[in-house]
Length: 292
Image (cartoon, rainbow, N blue to C red; front, top):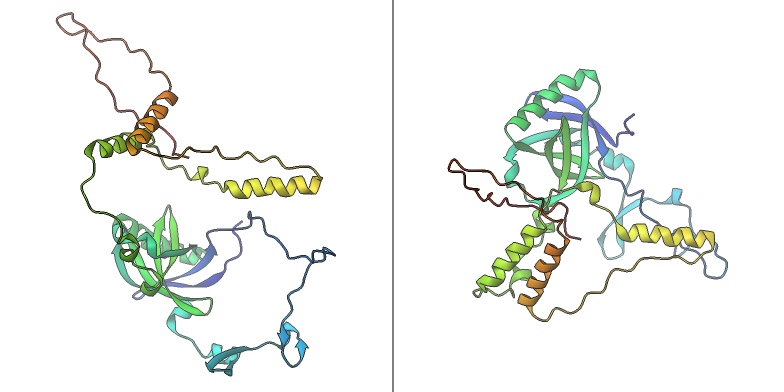
């Protein structure tokens, strides 16, 4: 059973539309979260709103205010917000299609799943999804989320859509000032060759099941040990010596990689037409897994 939708509305392209539901595509429930306790009583501290004149106040008495001048506010209530009814409030309206290759990951923000809302939406949803998938396109659209209109990118994934909110140009810092001090002189060709050789040793398929937060795992063990009243045992990362010489470090890294490779299987040599034994061609070997 699918979780409860966080948003319901319509996916629209020109005159074609279908009802859809939006779901959070990520979860942070696995993270260890701490509460604030008083150091003497271990009672949980409650963060209550405080008014300079009235002291502690109830949250039900709070209203939204916008500071238009220093210490001067205008109050915005729910009725004011209800007056804002633009198309993107309840519609993901597609404005443009772009090539997937042109999507810069720097602008991708939070991901959501978009699914058809009921059988009546199924065919329209699938036709739009298949057409985009066949042309390898993503769709730029707008939708109101959490009190603001967001530019979003709709991406075909398997038999459905992933919607990614996009950061604005003002939110993404240009890399130039951060890379300005990087040199542009000629590099040692041997060092580059060794670096390429080292990269080849660590080539492998991307396996997202290996995306693990080791800090959270270690923190979980600490918490469990505390609950049991025992001393936690956490494996420390191996200490690395200081790298003095780049060439030496590259060569040593390659040697370490070679020593970890399994022994090559013996290969029977094929006979040529003349009866001589032909030396088998060396095959390029990839090392499975990613560097840790």
